[in-house]
Length: 433
Figure (tube, rainbow, N blue to C red):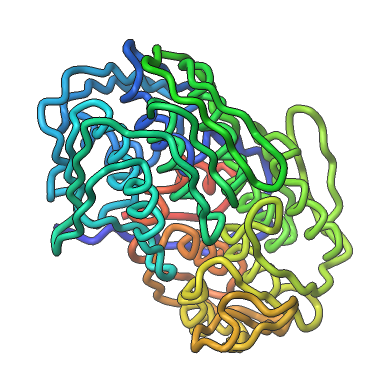
């Protein structure tokens, strides 16, 4: 099989309009939630990303019907033909583990293969497994995956050691049809979590948000189908705003509400970006250049970890020393050597810089970076290790001197809606082969 490549020739400032669809991190979770409905559910404004195809395959394997048309996905629940998500799906993404709770409700047993996703650090399944056991499930970890069995799930109290997005989703999907009340303490509150909870509520779930990261769920016996429209992807929106800034152009992003970008907008404004914001679009430019910044990633409502990869490229074009402190994933900076190979002056450290000590303090994790700008980047031959790092490589290639060849482009296609079309519309000379 021939490797897919992108060849990029720097072509000046990127300018124009981009419309973002629903988030990659939301659409697949909604598809899993739709398993629990007694009738079909419809998800609108869905992105055309590889993640949807992977999740469709899993749902169809266990007996669901998935119909896709344009930006609309219909999930039609059916009898569970096989409560085992096939081993062919091993390592493709992290969706299988979210299917455990729904499969236990529908079939009383389940098997899911080992999870995958981007190699950005440990994302252990312990939180998921411990939560399902607290509901009363028998869960066994094997070399090839996770086996679970339960005649019924009973509401419980879950105290998450860390506000993990995935673990919060697992608990929500198990709790909505569990017998009795479930209280999640230290829950994640990312917009995609709220969006999933709202969808489940449309299906008939009883979910309340309480202070101090608590979510309360009263289990119901039956959920119906529902229709929802996904809000625009905040990670994609930020990425394209930065694409304009890093190339001294300006990109107008449609489809992502301002409230999903509050922290990101202010961070960029402190660096010298100017914004125009309406109810329909957000546009950023930096006619007077960019200033350095110190930024720490965090759980919502902090600066999202997925925003820091494009930000790192932007730092290389800011006049001075910038600092990035990653506190969510310990291996998130694994893409830095590729940028260094293109001439970026970045040093990584295992200490906590640019913010208070985080949970990786006193570990060997390289989770802080100091970036010197303004740096002239040069084109190179780069292999994309994951979705977000892939986008950063495109940005670096767009501002570099000389052409670049990007490999591993399936990563970016798994997470961004039609990126080749979007970049070409902004004026980037990109050849996909």
